[in-house]
Length: 159
Image (cartoon, rainbow, N blue to C red; front, side, top):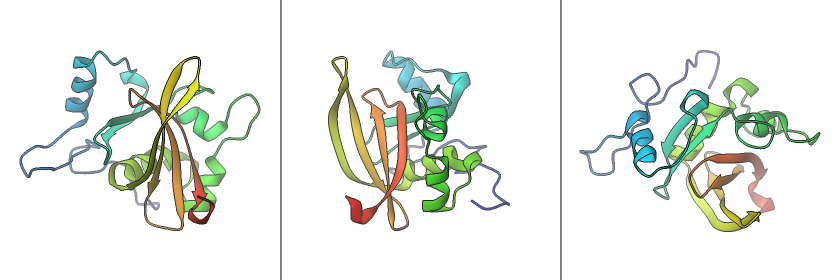
Protein backbone atom coordinates (compact mmCIF):
# COMPACT_ATOMS: atom_id res chain seq x y z
CA UNK A 1 0.00 0.00 0.00
CA UNK A 2 2.38 2.59 -1.21
CA UNK A 3 1.95 6.24 -2.02
CA UNK A 4 -0.09 5.43 -5.13
CA UNK A 5 -2.66 3.50 -3.14
CA UNK A 6 -6.09 5.16 -3.19
CA UNK A 7 -8.14 2.65 -1.18
CA UNK A 8 -10.61 0.03 -2.16
CA UNK A 9 -10.43 -3.63 -2.94
CA UNK A 10 -12.27 -5.17 -5.83
CA UNK A 11 -13.70 -2.92 -8.47
CA UNK A 12 -16.57 -0.88 -7.05
CA UNK A 13 -15.31 1.95 -4.89
CA UNK A 14 -14.12 -0.24 -2.03
CA UNK A 15 -16.93 -2.81 -1.99
CA UNK A 16 -15.68 -6.20 -0.85
CA UNK A 17 -16.29 -9.09 -3.21
CA UNK A 18 -15.92 -12.79 -2.65
CA UNK A 19 -16.69 -15.44 -5.14
CA UNK A 20 -17.28 -18.77 -3.44
CA UNK A 21 -19.35 -20.35 -6.20
CA UNK A 22 -18.53 -18.20 -9.26
CA UNK A 23 -22.09 -16.82 -9.05
CA UNK A 24 -22.45 -14.97 -5.77
CA UNK A 25 -20.78 -11.62 -5.20
CA UNK A 26 -21.05 -9.88 -1.85
CA UNK A 27 -20.88 -6.13 -1.55
CA UNK A 28 -20.57 -3.94 1.50
CA UNK A 29 -24.30 -3.25 1.23
CA UNK A 30 -25.27 -6.93 1.07
CA UNK A 31 -23.13 -7.65 4.13
CA UNK A 32 -24.68 -4.72 6.03
CA UNK A 33 -28.12 -5.97 5.01
CA UNK A 34 -27.25 -9.39 6.40
CA UNK A 35 -26.23 -7.80 9.71
CA UNK A 36 -29.51 -5.88 9.81
CA UNK A 37 -31.57 -9.00 9.08
CA UNK A 38 -29.83 -10.72 12.01
CA UNK A 39 -30.56 -7.73 14.29
CA UNK A 40 -26.86 -7.00 14.79
CA UNK A 41 -26.24 -3.40 15.77
CA UNK A 42 -23.51 -1.41 14.02
CA UNK A 43 -22.73 2.21 13.31
CA UNK A 44 -22.75 2.56 9.54
CA UNK A 45 -21.48 6.16 9.64
CA UNK A 46 -18.49 5.08 11.74
CA UNK A 47 -17.67 1.95 9.71
CA UNK A 48 -14.15 1.69 8.30
CA UNK A 49 -14.81 -1.57 6.43
CA UNK A 50 -16.93 -4.72 6.35
CA UNK A 51 -15.97 -8.07 4.82
CA UNK A 52 -16.29 -11.81 5.36
CA UNK A 53 -13.28 -13.79 6.55
CA UNK A 54 -12.31 -17.40 5.82
CA UNK A 55 -14.34 -18.63 8.82
CA UNK A 56 -17.45 -17.36 7.02
CA UNK A 57 -18.13 -14.68 9.63
CA UNK A 58 -18.96 -11.13 8.61
CA UNK A 59 -16.33 -8.96 10.25
CA UNK A 60 -16.27 -5.17 10.42
CA UNK A 61 -14.24 -2.35 11.89
CA UNK A 62 -15.59 0.95 13.13
CA UNK A 63 -13.54 3.98 14.15
CA UNK A 64 -14.82 3.28 17.65
CA UNK A 65 -13.43 4.70 20.87
CA UNK A 66 -10.48 4.23 23.19
CA UNK A 67 -12.00 0.93 24.34
CA UNK A 68 -12.70 -0.70 20.96
CA UNK A 69 -12.27 -0.31 17.20
CA UNK A 70 -9.70 1.51 15.08
CA UNK A 71 -9.13 4.29 17.62
CA UNK A 72 -8.34 1.67 20.27
CA UNK A 73 -6.06 -0.27 17.89
CA UNK A 74 -4.07 2.83 16.93
CA UNK A 75 -3.99 4.76 20.21
CA UNK A 76 -4.59 2.27 23.03
CA UNK A 77 -6.74 2.60 26.13
CA UNK A 78 -6.26 4.36 29.47
CA UNK A 79 -2.64 5.34 28.84
CA UNK A 80 -1.58 2.01 27.33
CA UNK A 81 0.19 2.41 23.99
CA UNK A 82 -1.66 1.66 20.80
CA UNK A 83 -0.35 -0.43 17.93
CA UNK A 84 0.10 2.12 15.15
CA UNK A 85 3.91 1.93 15.40
CA UNK A 86 3.76 -1.87 15.73
CA UNK A 87 1.96 -2.15 12.37
CA UNK A 88 4.54 0.14 10.80
CA UNK A 89 7.48 -1.87 12.20
CA UNK A 90 6.01 -5.28 11.37
CA UNK A 91 4.36 -4.63 8.01
CA UNK A 92 5.54 -1.19 6.89
CA UNK A 93 1.94 0.05 7.11
CA UNK A 94 1.57 3.69 8.03
CA UNK A 95 -0.99 4.78 10.61
CA UNK A 96 -3.49 6.12 8.06
CA UNK A 97 -3.52 2.77 6.21
CA UNK A 98 -3.93 0.38 9.17
CA UNK A 99 -7.70 0.06 8.68
CA UNK A 100 -7.39 -0.85 5.00
CA UNK A 101 -4.51 -3.20 5.77
CA UNK A 102 -6.64 -5.02 8.35
CA UNK A 103 -9.38 -5.41 5.75
CA UNK A 104 -6.92 -7.05 3.37
CA UNK A 105 -5.58 -9.37 6.09
CA UNK A 106 -9.02 -10.40 7.30
CA UNK A 107 -10.46 -10.87 3.82
CA UNK A 108 -7.48 -12.69 2.27
CA UNK A 109 -5.45 -14.05 5.17
CA UNK A 110 -5.49 -17.60 6.46
CA UNK A 111 -6.97 -18.19 9.90
CA UNK A 112 -4.32 -20.08 11.88
CA UNK A 113 -6.05 -19.91 15.25
CA UNK A 114 -9.65 -19.26 16.23
CA UNK A 115 -10.65 -19.54 19.89
CA UNK A 116 -13.82 -18.46 21.66
CA UNK A 117 -12.67 -16.78 24.88
CA UNK A 118 -14.33 -15.12 27.87
CA UNK A 119 -13.83 -11.37 27.70
CA UNK A 120 -15.47 -10.45 30.99
CA UNK A 121 -18.91 -9.55 32.25
CA UNK A 122 -20.27 -12.87 31.02
CA UNK A 123 -19.41 -12.04 27.40
CA UNK A 124 -17.41 -14.00 24.86
CA UNK A 125 -15.42 -13.08 21.79
CA UNK A 126 -13.05 -14.62 19.29
CA UNK A 127 -9.31 -14.49 19.59
CA UNK A 128 -8.48 -15.00 15.95
CA UNK A 129 -5.00 -15.04 14.40
CA UNK A 130 -4.49 -14.38 10.70
CA UNK A 131 -1.44 -15.21 8.58
CA UNK A 132 -0.88 -12.94 5.62
CA UNK A 133 2.33 -12.46 3.61
CA UNK A 134 5.23 -12.43 5.97
CA UNK A 135 6.96 -13.21 9.22
CA UNK A 136 4.21 -11.78 11.40
CA UNK A 137 0.72 -12.80 12.38
CA UNK A 138 -2.08 -10.40 13.14
CA UNK A 139 -3.92 -11.14 16.38
CA UNK A 140 -7.48 -9.88 16.54
CA UNK A 141 -10.18 -9.65 19.14
CA UNK A 142 -13.54 -10.00 17.41
CA UNK A 143 -16.91 -9.95 19.11
CA UNK A 144 -19.27 -12.85 18.48
CA UNK A 145 -21.26 -10.36 16.37
CA UNK A 146 -18.21 -9.71 14.11
CA UNK A 147 -17.13 -6.29 15.43
CA UNK A 148 -13.34 -5.94 15.60
CA UNK A 149 -12.43 -4.79 19.08
CA UNK A 150 -8.65 -4.89 18.74
CA UNK A 151 -5.77 -6.06 16.55
CA UNK A 152 -1.99 -6.13 16.72
CA UNK A 153 0.94 -7.82 14.98
CA UNK A 154 3.33 -10.36 16.50
CA UNK A 155 6.13 -12.57 15.21
CA UNK A 156 5.18 -16.05 14.04
CA UNK A 157 7.84 -17.63 16.24
CA UNK A 158 6.13 -16.10 19.32
CA UNK A 159 3.00 -18.26 18.86
